Picture 1 (cartoon, rainbow, N blue to C red):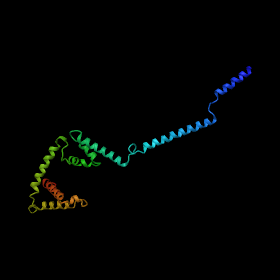
Picture 2 (cartoon, rainbow, N blue to C red):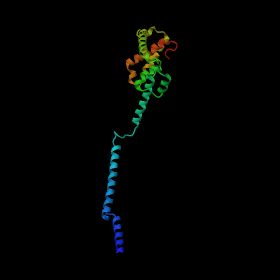
Picture 3 (cartoon, rainbow, N blue to C red):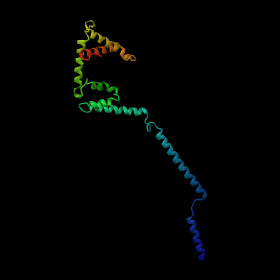
Picture 4 (cartoon, one colour):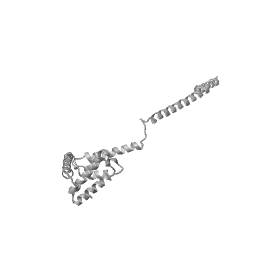
Length: 202
């Protein structure tokens, strides 16, 4: 009897520690776990593709984007120089202008570089208006009543040279062959010649 009770206890312990699942159940559970894992991986891949295939969410920087970024940097640099302090830093403006000037800033930048416009921002408008009035007066004085027959030999030669140079300027651009543009350039260069007799038109 004691032997049987010990044997009974041992068998009951083995049954208690024995897994409840049958081999078929274990196989089903294993297959189920694999399928569950595959579904997770598939879902992960789909989510990744959904994110990285959307142009609005992920788009690599191309050369056009890089060019736009560089243009914005250049524009910011010029704006900081032109509109920062009351006096424009001429050295800084010259330095950045070597790499090219944005189209919509060229008019202002070149006027400053040529010293037509003052470095002081507060005096720009008044100075430009004054110089425009001066130029109109010079045109009336030296060009509108111009008579080539009354010019001396050196002035006749200079005027002829000016016209020849204007007529052959940039032959590939129609703009420079427009009558009004050519007349504008001739009178501008002629006024310069008259106003600067020491150098004249070279």
